[in-house]
Image 1 (cartoon, rainbow, N blue to C red):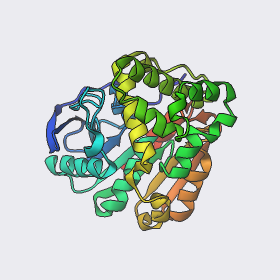
Image 2: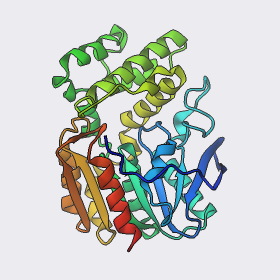
Image 3: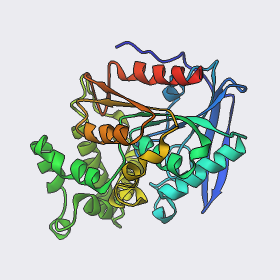
Image 4: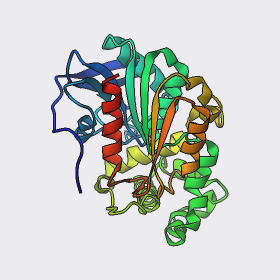
Length: 319
């Protein structure tokens, strides 16, 4: 498969920032120190960022900040720790962390790339701090509304009935009266480590199932790591069960406020994890955005996804 990203690059600066509440967030900068400021927001919640994601940005044009959101990656403490307290891990906290990073790096306005959950966070940040956003590139679009969470944790089971049966049968009878996301969130903090690990394994198996329509899909090898799958599943269920700690449909309702900020939405037609209607509705309310629908892509990516992301960032680098 063709890779349209830029060559591998190492950061020229990195560090940890104390954002309060006992959390320290890992960040790094790469590209041109005098370039156009940019920010990368990773998915999950809880995936962390990887070195390959530096390569979306032209290193001669952009000064890119990447960071691991609270509880994951190289930030500390991890959500997988025995005493993890997720009460201070909300969308409002993440938005405040972004602002702390912006001030640390002396950025007035930046171009933001968000992918999957990162699109929800990017939209929430942009609506809270519109004057700090130069442009938005959003790929694999989701707003984490309660309707979307119900779809991805229940209704999409109609497309994957065998995997859905496994996903729900893993729940004990005592929790089956709850929505699956609440039941799993409970199990992931059970006092018994074996219960926690089984719940994390089954949650991640479901995650792999509903993105599997992407052409060429391969299982996510990170789910083989017990620590990663526990931190990931804890953070996903935490944010999903609370509708991203936003008013329901807030990001769509207030999308028109972003008109004037240029944006590009990139979404796959095979994306059954986050159906296309959300990206389409967003494009109808946000007058200064373009929607690109990819006929070869699902939520796990696709042949043309990377090229579209890189192309959009190149477009904004020259404006």
